[in-house]
Length: 235
Image 1 (cartoon, rainbow, N blue to C red):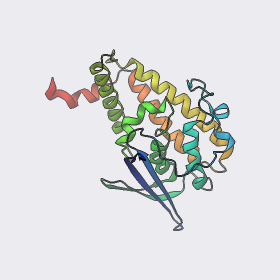
Image 2: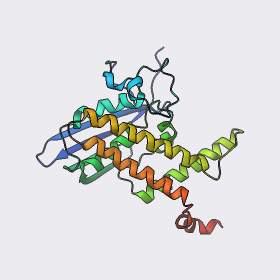
Image 3: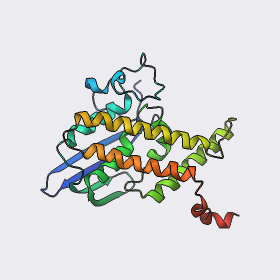
Image 4: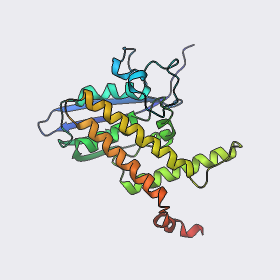
């Protein structure tokens, strides 16, 4: 009997000032939290892991011919290579629960799309952000992102402790994770710059990397005072 896949999705609409519209439909497997690929087409050579692999990537090249993150990116890049990052768009995102709308630059709009695409795959680094991706918040601010990251990581440590593991309550490994994410983003930008005729996708990744930079800065300076006040009724 064929297994029934439980899924959830995001439907993106990008409308430009000239009324040109680009639509991106994403469906994600509830169990794996990976994007369900619509077809079995062979990815281009640049997505091969031997070409795209990050310096810290633990993936075995004998098991993966293609970088899973690059394969996801390939499905998006072709729709936006003709646009500049500063192009104004009206972006609408439909989910099962609600609809999001914002008028913004294309690079900011694509940041919300890449926040899903770059995580919903078998990349062992970005996979640690899957809990956040499952409850994706489009157009999140820096402050919202910081809270979501710290909340996600704290809950992950609770799960680890419940399973008999050793939790990282001091969040030392979280800083290491975000250092790896920064390296990954830099690698992605370097490769995309070679194949993208304009700069929309690259600058969207740069925007995401600025969020990663802010998280590592927050952790390195132990700047939790602004968040502690939120929990005064627990103390």
